[in-house]
Length: 415
Ligand code: NAD
Image (cartoon, rainbow, N blue to C red; front, side, top):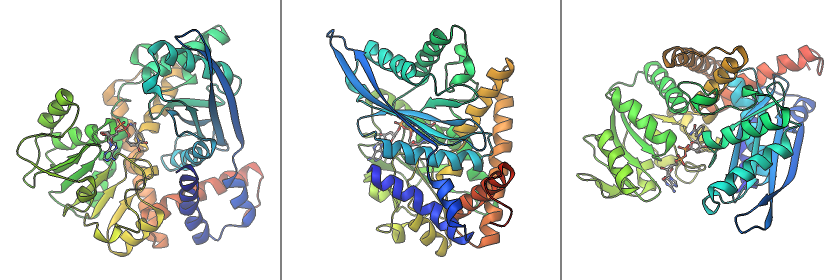
């Protein structure tokens, strides 16, 4: 999968590069990571023995600011995967206009098999190995798959131990008590909802019916926020099953059922369908919020939704985005749709730097402004170049990066 993810990341970039007729040297600058750090992390396990874990940090591009991106704990982590995710972060941070470059980290491990103490020692070991390379003006990690505010708190504390003083801005996604930001927990979903509302307004879709794949942090929170705004959510799913009711689901009750039983399976007055069939329901809006690679050339012609909001990372291939566009459907790419998380991470970093904290209301207002202007910029590029939103997002971001390359003296105007 990790090779595919890098190929997929390049494919969407290359589409934009072709439209912009980018010089080979610019492509070379933009597609090679600045720094790849690979460390061995010795951790004392509960049985008293040392186990050595492999950790990575890729600082892909820091031309617009310190690199920024999450740290993933997963058995499938590899340096190729982390490289692709860091490349993605470069463009996401540019599209949503936060003053960061792109970075990402990962540790090959199965956190489900680690005790809390082992997880803490691994997280502290990662920072011990990486502390020279990170910092509020160098590279700022955050949570990703299987890392959370508690892991960020241990990491921040380890950095404190090494430096001898608190440096809250070294990491984002921290608990509120340790310099975290209001609104961070729902930022990804809330940012996606702001984008979706702009899209529905722009493409004049009224009384939208919605299907959501994935009922975790991103999907469940989006379902909750959308149902609070009276959208009709007709289907949701998790790894076990998908549930469908054309009349609409009571999302509060589905959340309670999932909390009680661990799954949406068994919820009353619905039809259970497969996750594949959820994707092809006759709905106005489809929100893939679970996995990568769920809409590809193999099923794109069966997709009926008018608007697809890519809350997951990489759920729709570049080729499928282009096909949808030709059929008059719009897929809002991940680097725009789920950029609310990193936008609020930026607000957290700013609040840490100034030592003054905003209310949730202030944070969400700033988030809405950022998301709406990112949507407008991508939509304008889509109209100007007559391309799908995925290609348009990359065109917009690459053009901004070219301006930076000119100003820094890497290239001359018109190269
Ligand atoms: P999560 O682990 O909280 O939830 C994942 C959900 O997907 C769960 O409900 C799980 O049951 C479901 N799922 C797993 N396998 C599935 C399958 N085969 N079919 C259908 N559903 C399946 O994760 P999350 O934080 O919600 O992240 C989901 C996606 O959103 C990922 O691609 C992630 O990278 C992306 N994302 C999340 C955030 C964030 O802030 N949470 C930010 C940016 C991007």
